[in-house]
Image 1 (spheres, one colour):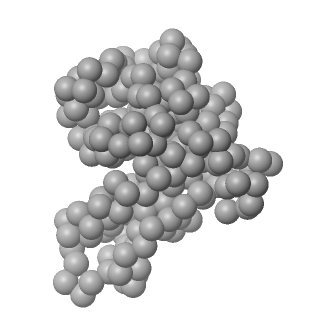
Image 2 (image 1 turned 45 degrees about the horizontal axis):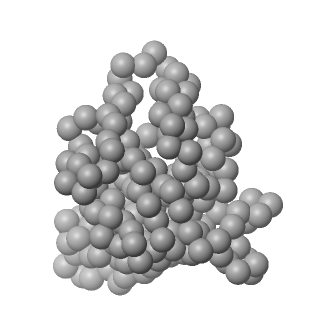
Amino acid sequence: MKGVVLISGSGSNLQSLIDNASSIDLSIEAVISNKKEAFGLQRAQQSNIPTHALDHKLFSSREDFDQNLSQLIGQYNPDIVILAGFMRILTAEFTQKYTGKMLNIHPSLLPKFQGLNTHQRALDAGEKEHGVSVHFVTAELDGGPIIAQSKIKVLANDDVESLAKRILIEEHKLFPEVIHWFTQDRLKLEKNQATLDGQLL
């Protein structure tokens, strides 16, 4: 299946997708970032994947940026749009266009800790467990139907850095697996619920 990956930063999840692409039946057609200095763009270029930088600061509104982003994605006619550390809140119009074919990875056990600074917030809340979630994207920030989660125990001596490092390991395992479900046509969004092989998740 053809996919377009959206990033904003270092692209470590992108790298795990590049490394696993053939085994998960994913052809990454392009990588798009809203930040031209994002290291993830270099990762894509090293693998001969077309890249685009679309600076959100050059657009007068969120709607204007999303329209341009949508046009750019449309050039590749993807079967799946993958948000791999894309730090933009998307408009309802944009998310509706890709309903059922846009996936996001989020570093918390949703619905806990939507938004930013999830590791610090988990520590501040005294959580015993923390983790990562993959979900379908809807207009609600980090609120789309959850597909899969991976959990780790929060250790007594954990800080943001140590927690982030261990969560990232889980992200790099979980995201390719979930995307493989999608490329095999096993994962669907039906009536705003995630299903795998016809069973509700």
